[in-house]
Length: 217
Image 1 (cartoon, rainbow, N blue to C red):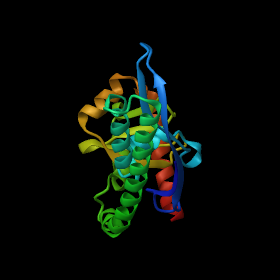
Image 2: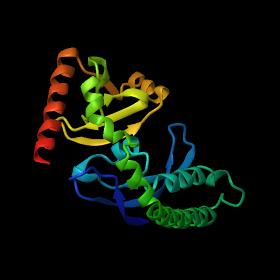
Image 3: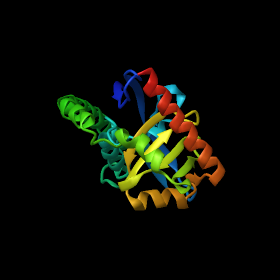
C-alpha cells in the first residue's frame, strides 16, 4: 500500500516537509524456521535520512498509531483459526492492510483538527524545540552524544528534553525521552558519548550556528 503525502514537524525557516511511504506485509522465517508476518515501511526522510531516525525522534508522526496497530495485528495472523491456508492468510493480511489505510486516513484528519492547538503550544514554548539553544548552552560534556546509526549529534537537556543536530549544527528535531529510554540507548550503544574535547568543540559549533541564524533572522 502506498500512502501520502504526510507532513512532518518542521522548524521556523525550514519550510514544510512532506513524505510518502510504502507499507508492505512481509512473510519470512526466523532462524529456527518459524513463520512470521510483519510490516515493512519504505521511504526516505527529508535530506535522505534513514526513515528510522524519524520514528525515534518525532513523537507526533502521522502514521505511528496506525502502524503499531497493523504490526500487532499481523503478528497474530498465523495463530488465528482459519488462517492456516495460503488463501486464508492472504485474505486476513489484505483485511489488515485495508484497516491500516482507514486508520491512516482517520489519523490524518484528526491531526488537521489539532493543528491550531499545536501551533499555540509551539508559540508558548511548551514544545522542547524552544529550549534547544538553552539546553546546549547549559549542557556539560556528558550531555553530548553521537547517534551511531546516522551520525546525528544528540544533546540531553533537563526533564528528558533531547535535541538532535546535524554535525554541521542544524537542529533536526527535539523530543522528550524518559530516563529509562535514554539509558537504554546508551547501554545498547545506539548513543555513544563524545570525548570531552569533542563535546566542547561541538558545543561551540552549535552555539555559533544558533547565533548566526539569529542574526540572519
